[in-house]
Every structure is written in structure tokens, then in C-alpha cells.
Length: 263
Image 1: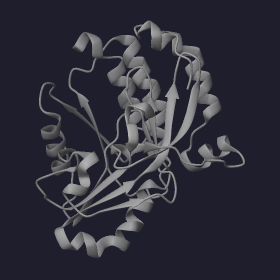
Image 2: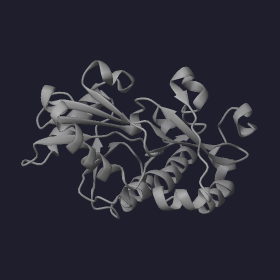
Image 3: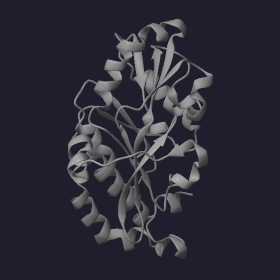
């Protein structure tokens, strides 16, 4: 398992995603008052370990955590969240991201603002789920890099779970697609809030989600300017980096993926 997960070309691809997708979205948050726990396996080798830590050090809200490999993910995340919750915090707003997810620059601020709207519902049970259900799929193939609008209910990177400090469960303990079974929830579709990667090392293509996923009309006058302003995404730069390294990143992908046509 380690030989596959820690293969140099795979780690370089994950570093490409980390540097170009996840981290710029956190760095550009309009509301800087948040803590982001960045969880990694304790066997992550150098030089990638050092490269990751160098990237994380540029964002003061991030706390890197190396956890022993082989434990249940939910247990590790629960301990990390409980250990790093501020003592004077009454309510935690928990979200979950992979290294190929990206948040809109307003994600933290809008989550905080909306909590004031539905706080009476939160008080009824002591927890509440917020579902930002519009965003984009960033799809990379052997031919191209594209953005596709998607409306997807209770998708993990668009979900925020509000809970009282010290609650036994965390956001990772809930099946995100069934969050509505456990607590009051609200779906917010007013503006796209997330980007999720779809590539040879992931399964986030729209076709994987059947009737749960739909597109939406997205026609700004200048799409590239929109992504730059709202997500801090420089599509031209990302395209150049992908084109230069995709053959290396895709070297152990199945032949049909290495030759896949975009769309």
C-alpha cells in the first residue's frame, strides 16, 4: 500500500493539487478567523514531507498533524478536532476537504454569517448542517483541464456541521450524503462555493453520482476572470503546469485514461 501511495509520480501529482487547488483557496479567505487541521500519515517520506510543510507554513491558519498510519480515520480526526478546539469556543463549524478540493474566498465568512440566520434552529438540537450545493468539477485528462458547473446535494467539500464544543461526534462521523437524517439542515444555492478535483486518482466525475448531481447555468461574461476573483484560480497558469507534467502524472494510469478525451 505504501509503495503505491508514496510512489514519486503520485506524490508529485498530489503536490500539484495541493499547491494549485487546495491551499490558494484557504489563503484567500475573506474571513481569516479559522483553524485548518491538515492531516497526514506519519510515514510520508521526504522530500515530499518537507515540501508539504514548506507550503503549509505560508498559511498561518493551518496546523499540520502527522498521525500513525493504520488507525481508523474517524478516530484520528475526532482526536485532532477535540485537541485543537479553542477553550473559549462555544460552537464549532466543521468542514472537510481533500487535497484536490477548493473553497470560494467567501466560504468561511458566509458560513459565519449564515449561522446567525439559522441559530434558532441550531439551538433546538445543538447541531445543524449547512449544505453549499453549487460548485465546479475541475477535471484533468490526458487532453485537457476543464471546469464544469455542478449542483450536488450534501457533497463533502460543500458541507459545514455546526456543533456545541465537546460534542462526541465530528463532521467525519456523519455520512455526508445522509446528513439530513441526523440534524436540521439548510441548502444554500445562491452562489458556487466549491471546486472538486476529478482525475485519474479520484472518482468525482459527474457520471459517478447519477440523479444526485445536476449542472446549472453558468455564463459570466469572462469565466476566467470569475474564477480568479471568486476562487483565486489562475486557470491559465494551472493549464500550463498540467500540460507540462501530465504525461509524468499519468504514467501508471490505465491506457484508456491516458488516452481519454475530455468530456
